[in-house]
Image (cartoon, rainbow over all chains, first blue to last red; front, side, top):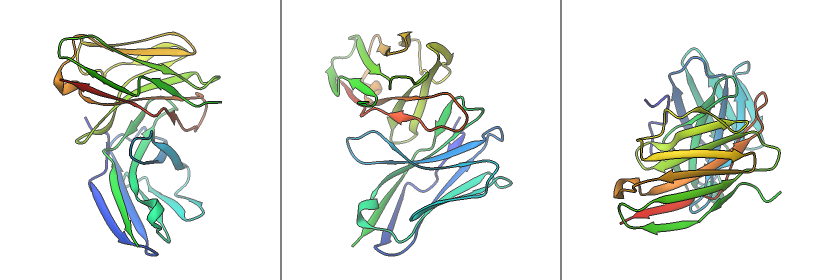
Amino acid sequence: DQQVKQNSPSLSVQEGRISILNCDYTNSMFDYFLWYKKYPAEGPTFLISISSIKDKNEDGRFTVFLNKSAKHLSLHIVPSQPGDSAVYFCAASSNNNDMRFGAGTRLTVKP
Amino acid sequence: DAGVIQSPRHEVTEMGQEVTLRCKPISGHNSLFWYRQTMMRGLELLIYFNNNVPIDDSGMPEDRFSAKMPNASFSTLKIQPSEPRDSAVYFCASSYRALNTEAFFGQGTRLTVV
């Protein structure tokens, strides 16, 4: 079963605008959430994370929001840049054990 | 550190043949994960190890798949016999099993079964 879901397979935004990528999860035991970025022919690389005790974590242009009651998290990128074009994966883990990923969202930032 | 090292980068094999994918985790990491990337399901967790011990292999699709971790610096994922539907990119990742740490991925092995 898919415990982590990314329902939008793709997203296209204009350079300089905000990109919002969404993720939903079903397992209430998840307590740590991560976003990874993946370029073609490369492995995913860690981008940003958030613990379940927080509802927001910011790192430069990237902010992750967590809504535990809705079992939803989102990644905001502002301003978006063409170099941000990649596939973004949402991931979740519980008690630092397994790490489950979503299907990914392909972001395209147009110049 | 060179990061997580996977070999081979590409593998083309005929249906029915045995395939072995290899992974060297980052030194000092004590958790290792095997994932398969597909279009429909994204990154599927196949199996993960803590301190070389398999913890959860419920993601392994069939008995044709097996994974071992004989020591802290090496793991294999074997498919025997391979089938065309096994064609995918297989990733290995490692982490230090502590509170709230990310996993680091290798560059993956692209497997094509013809």
